[in-house]
Length: 345
Image 1 (cartoon, rainbow, N blue to C red):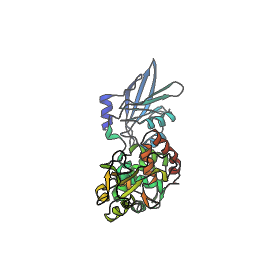
Image 2 (cartoon, one colour):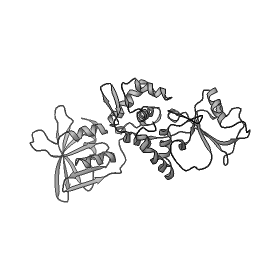
Image 3 (cartoon, rainbow, N blue to C red):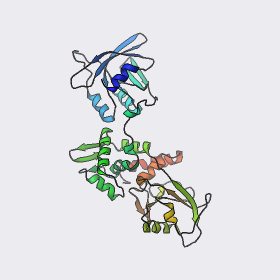
């Protein structure tokens, strides 16, 4: 008996106002354990052929929808239902559009009887997080694999992917690349055809990156240079001489956006190294130079040369803006079409 079968026996299915009951288990050779589920509401009753899933990725959902609703020994197709520990709002919408019912063990679900019932409940949190899609592939160092597909939508072979990541200033091990690719395939973001890998859904990929984006700042300082000969341009030479990563954060090189204050912002691996020996003094309120310290690879990944500076990639800028306030999100939206079309790649 699977873990989810045990949970079903212990907790049952709950989707008010329906009364849901498993009335029969059907064991079919080579196929998942199925149930017949009876739904009662206001004196009406319908029976569903339910397929039980331990987890539900976009790929497994697509395959499940391709299966029929027939039950062994029966000649007619029944109403269909998919049962899983958790069904996301996206999964529920896909099921509803296909007129297939789905109920999870967390209290979410959609029950469809064409022309009679349409019950939709969502908003309950995943009570079984171990069954959730692996999100780490869209965050941190692993996200470099996902990010590179927005700049290079197709690769002829596996080894080209870590090589392209290195060319753009990142470093990811081959086992990590392999793990991430498997998840991207499960999420229907990337497709593998023979030895080739190609981007299948840029919009979905960009959305996953936005959802999982985090920039961890370990230290920051704002100030100004008191010696006129000691300008921000000297930051780059100090960074290069100490082998310290340094990039400028400026959305204006990629998008026409209103300018706020005149503060120049930089990300660096070490504030101490790039300021060592300089005339920089802290001015938290009126300084015109801001330094943010982080060790995250993705912040420096795919940096672009512009007017003598290495600048954050357009994707990094977009992700920061998309996770900002209302004004920042509006600016991000104006970049989105170009990113999806790889015009900023």
